[in-house]
Image 1: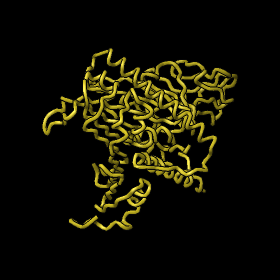
Image 2 (image 1 turned 45 degrees about the vertical axis):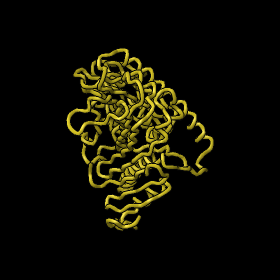
Image 3 (image 1 turned 90 degrees about the vertical axis):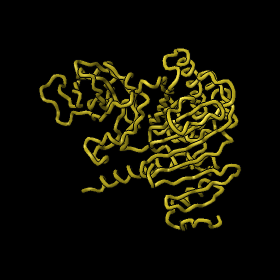
Image 4 (image 1 turned 135 degrees about the vertical axis):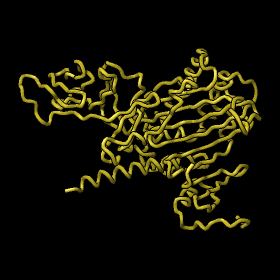
Length: 361
Length: 55
């Protein structure tokens, strides 16, 4: 059976970096829903359905007037709650003239959006406390570089990719991959209460790949730890610890003989078969060194592109081949299987909530 | 860390996966699908491991 094209609703997703949204109208499709974003006069993010109720013209291709959007086709005018406040040529605004307004939350440099029904979160509005945190992204103790690559492949393929880093050895050789990544056993934890999957791979004596050799200046072999945390469905972090071989964290005090990087991804479905691949690299060293920032930006983007090319190819193959095959999983897939299960649980929960609503009289 | 954790450890130097349930029961497997199936079946077949018992 192929990795699913279903995406869980009734969830928070990263819609954008906060810096992407300003006074101009900004369009992005999230989980199949076209959304238009802008900041109101007070700087708050507004998110509305990107389709005029009249003839479906995209509001993102329209015009702002103060905090309202005037449809660029016939002039239907919407306030920031999505209510239509004016239509052309007549005084009466139809009662049903409203576009959907989305709940958003700015946190840790992201704009999060709730996709689904607020009632399904147990609270109206949806509970923002359930949004997973990535505080290093807005912490002056770290310098972060990042980007976003459009992926023409389903969310579940990117998840498989990120949960099994053994592919670094083969797909990213010369960048972040070395033989030890694929060779080193992993430990996987499914924390059912916290709703998180953790995968750890601790390499005690490993070759230092160029990505880390050039950014840290370490010359020689390294102790390389990879500790993944995945908060389904959207937020993934690889906590990477790099130190000269044999240098372990001290029993007491700061781990200041090591270099720490946090590789953060937000996996946001655009549709069932395409994904917004947000990536960030945060480091706790060379904070003001622009050369290191430029190097990490260029090289990590190249690594992401290598994944994008591979996953786009895989998406095409899955569509051509269909579901009629049996996957084969081995030890390296232990984390990916755990992550798939949690995402599957979220899909099932949303389906049950939807079915419950439909069955109401 | 909360108590309700399933853990699968790839045994160093071997191809085996050692599953540990939150109840303390352990299970050796050669296949991650089977490892998760056993863990998620808790409590079926999850007799707590006795100290010193052969595995």
